[in-house]
Amino acid sequence: FISVLVALTSCDARIIDVPLQKETAMNVYTNQLRDVHGSQVNNELFQGKVTLIVNLASKCGYTPQYKDLQALHEQYASHGFSVVGFPCNVFGGQEPGDAAAITACASEYGATFPIMEKVSVIDNDAQCAMYHDLKEATGVLPKWNFGKYLVNQHGTPVAFFGSDIEPLSAALTARIDELLTLPH
Image (cartoon, rainbow, N blue to C red; front, side, top):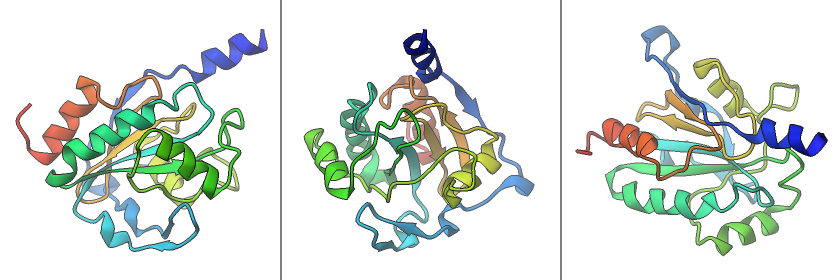
């Protein structure tokens, strides 16, 4: 019964569009960011870019999405796009490793997109500021690993894609094309 419950909670095929309103606009990149090794990240690295913020896990059924996240990152990088990963151990303890283990997993899939420090994404006292702001803007938090927030050039979240939504899916790439004003 427990394995069925875990399987059901990990399924997340949600696609949630966030209506852009002046009063809810925010820049999630005003939050201080640290990379996977704990070094301060210059937030200007993401200013003016469309980003896909993803909560990562090395020991998850969705971990192979690293490969497609990297493909997405490479496909759109020259147009002002970046995938940004946030390792997270709150769903099933599927990101137990340290920075070396996290980067080793990313390397196995050829992933070179920016990976931040391990965070908590759920609504509790340990929740990181970035995910607090993402929830404030969208009204949604990931139900499992590999939830994806699409953020526009101004740092405002505009959509959420659940774990089941593949990084190279038409639904996701069409929204990226729109934000980057590329023909689809």
